[in-house]
Length: 348
Image (tube, rainbow, N blue to C red; front, side, top):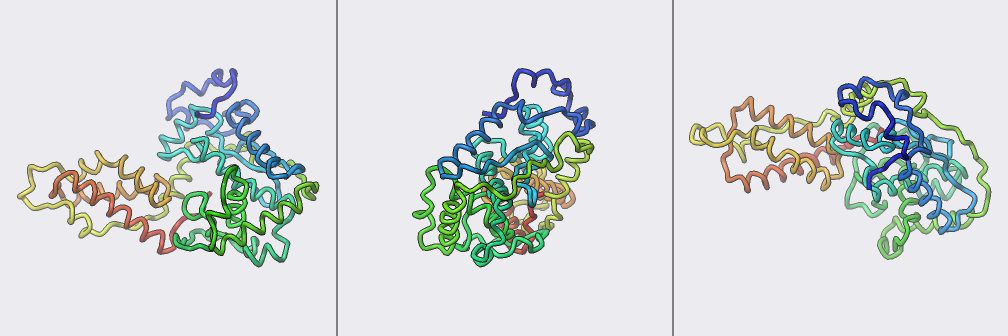
């Protein structure tokens, strides 16, 4: 079920505007409030129930709407992206970014648990503990612009996309906490024999220690609330698309020529560009899923491929079924090469 606001939601005049008209609005002009979204409110209540079931009775992260997902340093709360508060804005997010992060309820809860890990770390100043630093490292280390994940590593849990626990010590803790908090998760069995299990056991002990203790940091500050953001939606999405495009590397001509050809023999075959346009959604979604890379990044790669095929005058040189398989493999391999080269972007 998509997040749905209460009865007043349909009274927003911008809900019937075109994408072009919506993009001219400033985020603060949307007039959204978290209390007006039934679905998000239920998810937050579900999160609180999960904390109680884990014995954590004195901590509840406060939540607010902002531009993106984040939990500010030193503030035990969670910012939730504005687009999840209204179906029209989720549709706009999909058209601009080709994916809606946190749109599916299951994914939304995963992100909420992750951000709760950051929030509880701030609330109890857990990062100051010696054992914390021994297991996770120092959260004061600078965040890298990109990181080089090791998909086969057993030193980290796997929870959100892109092996995000490997990005930074703070993300390692938040991801490990999220795994520990998830209802029905048999983490001892799943991570048996993994070095990451030590981190999970530590969090299990740590949460038992703070469960009934009031947190020393109780700030209810809301950093960058939606009502304060004067950026237009157009500028917001321009910045977001630029971030995920991330200077993805060019494809080698020889890779394209394994599937397509400019030989006159194939002059009656469909052009490579038209073929790739046809299979673009399938390739984009599948490769994004398999590589844990944002769909917009993959789409930029496909766009570059299509442009290069036009420049080279390439046409389909193999049966379509074979071309589909080989194109998917080519994009997947190039994406993984890019990630392993250390160019996986940090989240905004």
